[in-house]
Image (cartoon, rainbow, N blue to C red):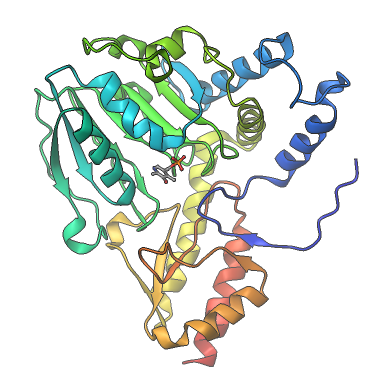
Length: 362
Ligand SMILES: *Cc1c(COP(=O)(O)O)cnc(C)c1O
């Protein structure tokens, strides 16, 4: 197959986002002819042997790459992490029970709202007082809450938990924007969930990595589609799974494994973050927008000290083939999302533009 690249783009999109070129090539090939079967991955039954093998491989790679305990289960569902916000209280909050959250930004706020629809929801700490520019610390997690929920990486404002909170109660984490970016101790969690489109694959699948022993204790009757225990016991095949999103996620996780797994990803991500934050701190025309100790390795955010110069800066990075660094509409400024597949070379291209801009406007 001959797939030409039209031009070099440095893709900083916050999600859906960059995936490795070789994953796109393998996915494109499978759309035309899946593993030499003469059929497309898009037309085979999800109950066929070849797709069952894809599902098993994708599930196995999630557990292997994150070092999950053997008894943990992996399912891939539709609905986005946003449906996860609703499924979490349904599956973990007892009838008449309560939950506890930390509010670190827009996604955490939405998760809290959904929990409040189901029952008594306590917000233990929030960084809303300073526009979510830091991670709250030193909060106590009550021992009588049914679960504790946090968002490991604040995709929009650019903050990240450097030390992941642990608790005696079940811990649930929305890891949508930094899953597979660093090692985590999965045994500390009842559930890790993540929309695929930030660091795992294309949009359309949400991964749930969970301890099945922590499910089924709420006393609540659930629709089978909203019941994580049901999906886990049906091997993620209760209904038609998001076949193509699971397949491309599998390819991307294979790529990650070939490239040293999450430990190497962490090292590469740290090098990228150091390069970009170094420029933000060194060049007087730029300013970071978050507390230094809580800076996200995945989604660095920054502004120009003179916002009037934004058009000049924008022209420069666009000319360099950089795409997707405008900040989220609720924050403004800039956000350079640097997921696993973004190469160091792309960060260097952005830093070169920043240095050029700083010289011109110094
Ligand atoms: C993008 C994002 C979401 C929303 O994911 P959808 O799959 O669009 O529902 C939730 N949480 C975090 C941390 C995100 O970055």
